[in-house]
Image (cartoon, rainbow, N blue to C red; front, side, top):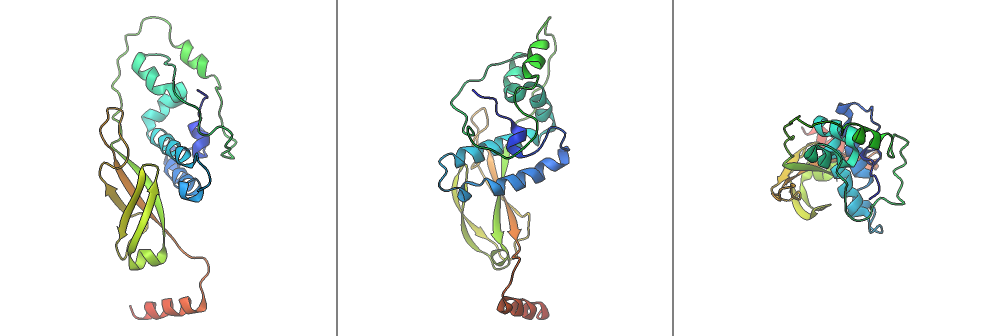
Length: 217
């Protein structure tokens, strides 16, 4: 299986500060959402892998292990060394994220095999696996103010949501058990985060209505 660089997928480099990972994910999720690429049969797989990259890089402990062991960090942790991955093809093959950061194997094998000698007496506690995953959904300012219904398409399926009037940017809605499953098979919650898009250009009529609404407050 080809090496998949989570940093390239997220559009960041290895020296990107931890506090900037979430913002990078939000930008990336808008850019590569399956709804924006209806003619790409791999769009769903790409978006799902973006969520996977975020889940690892947004967790400092997981990120540290990934930096050392690459995409095989889970196997390396389990067996105390290198674990070979298996599986199908890379859904990002032939797809460019237009990102010039670090990638490839880049001393990956040297790090893995260099630490396998001698007795392994170290024990470590496995980090707790997240029980939820976020998906950002853009809504326009009119729906945010007035409310309404919309169909949200995520990598985990389509969901019909009711947007409450007066919804603020960053408001979260929890969909229990709709965010895929953990490694032990238990379901994850899907957290929908609303991003409110502000129109850049308004008609004169829209401006007049907004001015009227502001004066009536």
